[in-house]
Length: 221
Image (spheres, rainbow, N blue to C red):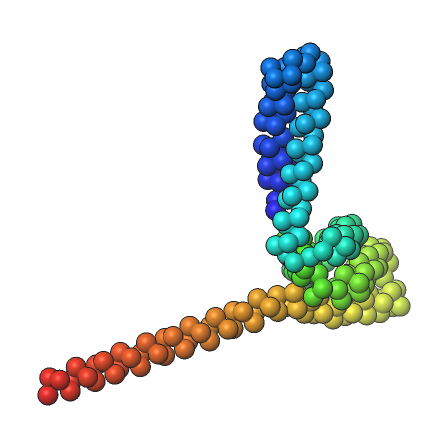
């Protein structure tokens, strides 16, 4: 669930609960305004916390994850975020117009993978290679590439290193694109299944129409 929406729902429950507790304390239990306010704040906080726990439990249930699994996935996503920011900064800092589109595509694919995992954490298990290997390699290579391209004087050895780094980065981009396909593999399989079902339905419909048409022709004869 969207973070802002989740917060809004918690507040939507907490505020009326707090007001209700405050009124009940004053009217039903004849408490002072100060005591009622303290009880109301505590009641609102309890309602806010309980709603948050319920939201989290529903989220985990809908994604078929245990608390331990989600904690593990969340930890890895939090560790990946600064790496992705470093990667984007390094890629877009390189002053090399011919490779701009390619670098922008790499950033887009990386962010797409991370965005999908954030929305559906269970997909993380299909992207472990990305988070535990390919992302780190991409960050190291892009920062090295940025450093080499920023040098004012390009020696023969530096130029060779630059070419090798770029070639390796190109190969790594292909692996990261495969990581995205792996994350989407279930969706692609479902899509193929739906296409096969649709084709079968269309074929059956055409056959039934052909049989009906042949029957109409036979009756007219």
